Length: 604
Image 1 (tube, one colour):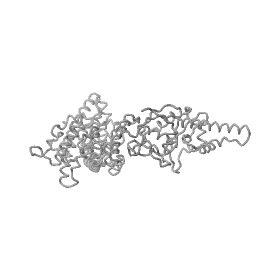
Image 2 (tube, one colour):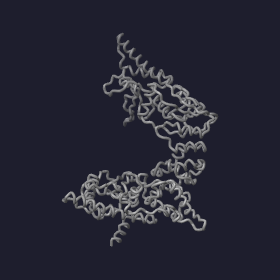
Image 3 (cartoon, helix red, strand yellow):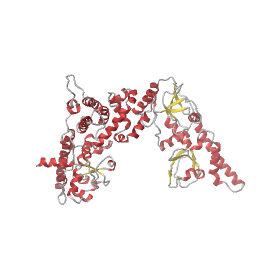
Image 4 (tube, one colour):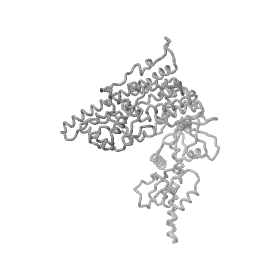
């Protein structure tokens, strides 16, 4: 293959006539204003942009396709080419030439015509965009962007005057309005100066139009007989998008090649029908990993490559239902979004297992009890710290055998002891929780500690509102022992056991008071019942939080006391968390009152 030359006027004409389309696996627009401006400047200064890639279309299009954004072909022209690489550039240029972006207008700045004192210094022949907005009166502001005279006063030529087609009447009309304020009432010399200025502006526009129309954007062209897989492989290797091509983009192409179905449309429909699923991760990733498991493939990139794309579409409804039931199951277990999910390795496993779990009845309850044990084991063992996909596949296979009542060669049914996560991995020790990091840092153990409090309902300190899916986004991570207090003692305060998820935006690190006193003063708790109810819902041991007495003692004594008290607090809270975990992995229900009653019995 050799690079061929094609100027922008010819590219423009082919797009306008509908001869060039995009395969549906191409992303939609992703370039921001700055990158679009940089692109316009590159063209105006006649600098190289790089190679574009096309696939010639024979009698039939190889891929489901779409027109470039905002193009409306005037003719019912047969498609001659698919644009494999270069759509961001050509879409940006097409839209800039029409100035049809909703929230910005683009210009070329010409210093010779700048007669406005309000602008900062700009470089001649630079691209400029102005953000637009709509006021209550329905008009688009700033108004000067649509006023030719005010644009020219600022030295701005709107880019829609530069599109490479015959628009001379449009240019003449704009030029007349732009120069109208300068037109003199009489006088030969004044009129000559006016017409000279008008011609100067006109000539500069013509020069810009000539540069753009003749700008060379070279391309490589794959012949129409090129195999689909080869065209796809070349596309992947040559893709120049600023955002790397994802695995999902490739699967999209394969599905559309094999089935003629739009995976994007299927995903959009799933998202619209089951919006809760997207709270737990990238929807495309969950689709691929769940589909892979449904075909007995690893829930990772390798599995996605290996699975049969035709079967993937045929099993779409099963996968979709599984994801929806998975999201509902997680909601019931107090996991409300991806930010609070300890590990995403469980998502595909649970979703794919729902293929064999009935919608109702005792069997559903029995199977979901198994899922519950699996879920909390996944959070409180080291099973998914490494090789998550391989381990998830092994666990899925064993769990599926139990759910389906399969038997081993010796005739006995598969049981929980045959599931690797149960058989080969112990629960974490209480001491392992002491170093668990701040939940916001995304570690499995740190988020797992927080997940237990979420499972209990975690009442808001201020309002007493119980945590649920509707208010999780309004909650914030706060220190129970104030950060400032612990810093004085040179203690790391960012530990999972020192975290509570509440709605107060005020940063609790400003407090240096004793922890419980600070909380009581802050939230004006009036009764011991309120104190107990709200703190216990987070599994906070109240006596250890109330040690205090840090005022009026020497710095060294104060430091030692804070260290001792904080250590006691962490250890006591770790006990609460571990007791809750033991109940959860046994399939038991938990509540804050039950947890504290059991502790009272143990202490007695």
